[in-house]
Length: 364
Image 1 (spheres, rainbow, N blue to C red):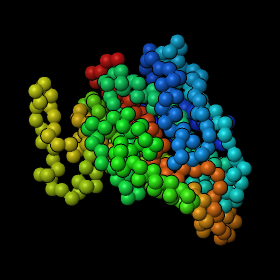
Image 2: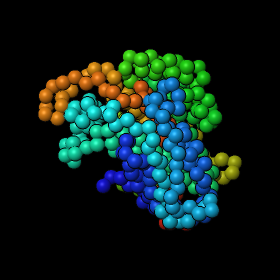
Image 3: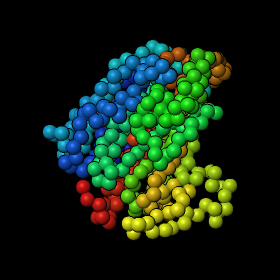
Image 4: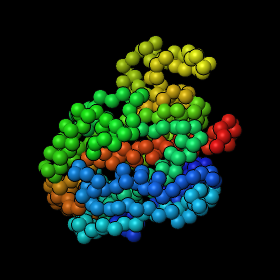
């Protein structure tokens, strides 16, 4: 019912924001892949709340437990269960929201669909659900690294009107992690931080764009028609909370070009490999990876839950005002970076295994 993602590498997440815990079940992982709690924890630490002055002050260690599927440091080929227990829960902060719908949040639509909802921090619609995705993504990243040396680097490209100047071909994880906003542009990052702090003090929020580059992606990943690689990537990142837009390669800017300008001319490099002189296609043509770097961008809206007073209605349909309480990010972008990377990794890992099953050209 919408809680599982993938075909060969299939992930099911579970849990609510202020329940006992959250996590994921990973099914279809190949056996004998070396994976440790520490590797998964490293990714979870990048998305955990309370990590800096520009994120939610909720204090969660987000310590993960591997309950099954791993033995003596290697995967068994059986379902991997990962659990993160909630610790710093304050459901009382959301009491007012039990009867009042937050503007642009999932409160009203969840109730329209199910006739019931967990109003404590948004329940299942909370970004806390993404813990399971990031944990599963850590395993997917490891498989991609072992099988094809695939590298996935996401970073904050833009916060509202401030846009960083980043070379996607050379940007490194160390540069991304060098500041709390995760923008590799050392000149723009302080201004982004200042803007987020300023908006946060006003009880408001801002959005922006996360860019992600995939290097060393093997050619041949993706399926024609309905399971095109860019289509699955779009679905993956657009399933993240607060995501509102997706571009790959030239994206919408490509509409301003002619075909002769936009077409990526082929050539053969010194190693006899088929390459493209430009990469407006973003590393994918006909829904199938061509071996060039894959570049994509995801737009995230301003956080819906804000402290500023807003017009809304309650469950009885009566007009009222709401100034939300609780602990929320004034900007989701810094913590969204590992989430985007995780979803990209899940798609690529799934397609890698599907390609292996159909074509048998890759070896672990």
